[in-house]
Image 1 (cartoon, one colour):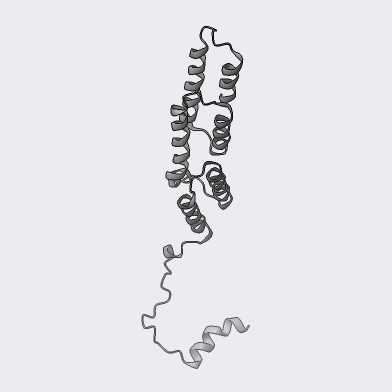
Image 2 (cartoon, rainbow, N blue to C red):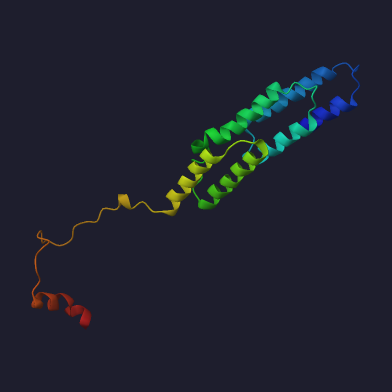
Length: 160
């Protein structure tokens, strides 16, 4: 859409009826597409295309607001964004995309990266708190002593 806007702006004469309406319509479609949810991996490409193709004469306010809101969402709502990611590889890929977006937009990704790294740690380490060993045997006295005969009897089946 940014390139289409540039083409109309550059190659359609100003005296052509409807040029401004067409440019406005392209801007509205672009904002609607951004607000509708652009995949994270395409967000930087859209931002770069906007910066490349839309000139200073274009009112970038609504477009820039939409792109900033989409980028901010990626960082501010990181817990929601990664809630459905369940593998370490998916989370690592998301982490790389956060770093990529941060490099291209000048934003800090540190807080979002910490959230992703915490989720990766949860996947890597099993939760041992949930494991409750059951008590075995009927002896309620943990200090009970075994006699030599008790021990021989206990391990006799192993020695055969």
